[in-house]
Length: 222
Image (cartoon, rainbow, N blue to C red; front, top):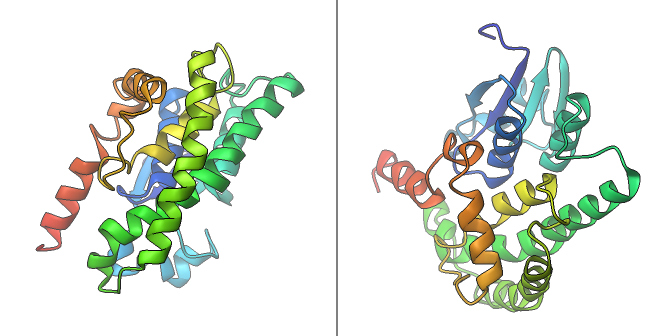
């Protein structure tokens, strides 16, 4: 493992996997990043399924401790490393957790519908689902204003300090431009993203998800 105790398994276009990298970078952790080629089906190999039985990314191997699911992983890493991104105070954690859950259950699910039916369906050679696309846009229209209100009233999602909730949401919203979701109508979200996307924890992964996608499709001969 090249001397690193922590190995993060991911795919450059995977927002959940990038979330773990963002968090590890923000905590200053040293890790080995291993790309799992989803397009080649490596996530379904018997070896990888020992790490993540769902056959998706991310997964980690932390000196023999294996875990999957991005939100669980970033909480584990923060707890293990006493990171201020996930403070010990249970009330502060509850606020952070509620925004992580809100982003993952509502916003991520909605945006994933849009991304799939505007971008990914072509790569996967399947039919576009117009109903799913419409539902995704409608759900975003319901949930994004809630985030806008929260970020208008607070510098960061869970209050005055950056937390795992911000890293989580940043990753969730990463496909917005690629998916032609206009966030400029939400000035507080836009300002918040602009601030975080120039931080080293983000730029160490990529400058934008669109750039990653362009490289990915070029490599696939698109």
